[in-house]
Amino acid sequence: DIWAMAGNIMIEAAGGPALEYKIGRVDAETCAGQGSRHVGSESTSSEEISKVFVDRLGFSSRQVVALIGAHVLGRAAKENSGYEGKWVKENDRFTNKYFIDLIHVPWIKESNEDETFGRRTLWRRFNDRRMFSEDEIMLQTDVDLAFQTTGGFFCSRIGGKFNKATSCPNATHSFASHVHDFALDQEDWFEEFAVAWAKLTSMTNEELACAAPDCKTPKERPPTPSTNSEAYAVTHIHALAIMVL
Image (cartoon, rainbow, N blue to C red; front, top):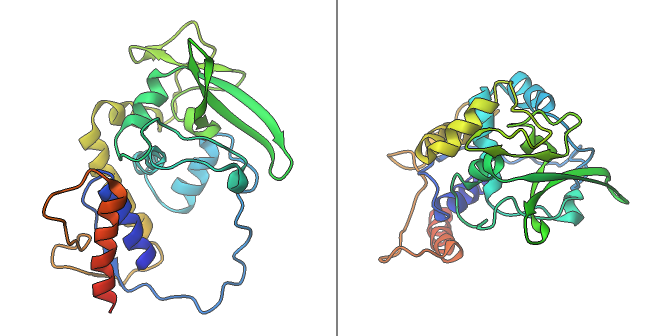
């Protein structure tokens, strides 16, 4: 319950939508079979994403794309996954910039062998002045949501349409249209994300109950809303501590 609360707090504090919050999850008494904290072999295509999220977990393709849009927050750390970088420049705000950049920014493929994780493939943001950005990246599965990347090394669109100067045609699978929709309409993404997030955070727990009358994240907002996500989150955590005590 506390992990779910923490996720809601950070998303909402970063400017995201109001999220459902339910309680009643039962803590496990053991951690047998927890596996490594490190990310193993990389996912290489939208087909793998579909097998896990659609076939196994029961999400719709639209919900899957909505959830992946949360890459807009935070960054990848090499010591955890073999990848290093953030998906967007302003990675502390919950906006649809992930989808906008995925479609409209040129991305150049880069592959290497990591001593810990093995082969790692990412796409770096192309920059006319410095050739490519050292910090802004997309993973293979990100780019594959919008483009056909087989044999490609340079992907982008012009005005939302296939850029003939690149080697990546537009993807034709079910995920692609949703990327375009969410890039055009942030509120559309927020609405779908809230539904998908509620489903994700309550999986395998069928008898959860709303923690508040409106079933939203309990809040104790400061008198003057802060634009600082960290400060806003601390306020929420204080409210959580009061609930727990």
